[in-house]
Image (cartoon, rainbow, N blue to C red; front, side):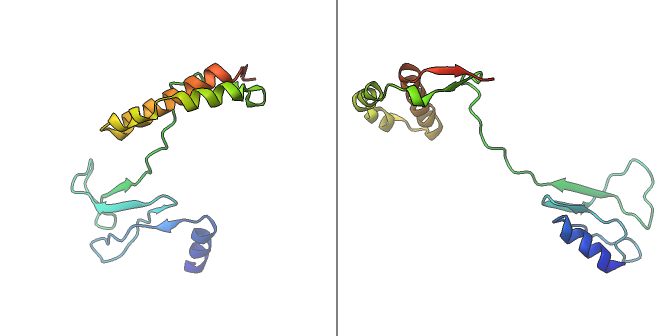
Amino acid sequence: MWNCSLVFLNFYNCTQFNQICNNYDRILDVVVSRLACVVEMNTFSFVNEDAHHPTLLVNIILKKPKHKDISRNSNHNYNFKKGDYMTMFQLFQNFNWNELDSFTDVNAAVKYFYDKIYYIFDVCVPKTKKK
């Protein structure tokens, strides 16, 4: 039976996380997940605790989602095939990049940088509506 469980866990790329033993020094409540998690014995329970099944607290560790800039108009795509690259080159060349040195907050500097990039794209690259 245990070999079947291992095959199942390996096939689905899962890990067993619970190492909390009950009053009889056995692990009966299995916590299986693909995500990293921490299993602890919980001191609070809504009902009387069974000696065979201690109350568990399962904390799933989630990765912070990647930041997606939703401030940009999302109902269009840039058509770079028809871009005015001479004007774009001139705008990039004439832009005062030294202004980035004045920022003390990296997030503000990145926002400023992207605002300038998208401004130049808006001027030089035609847009098409998303289908």
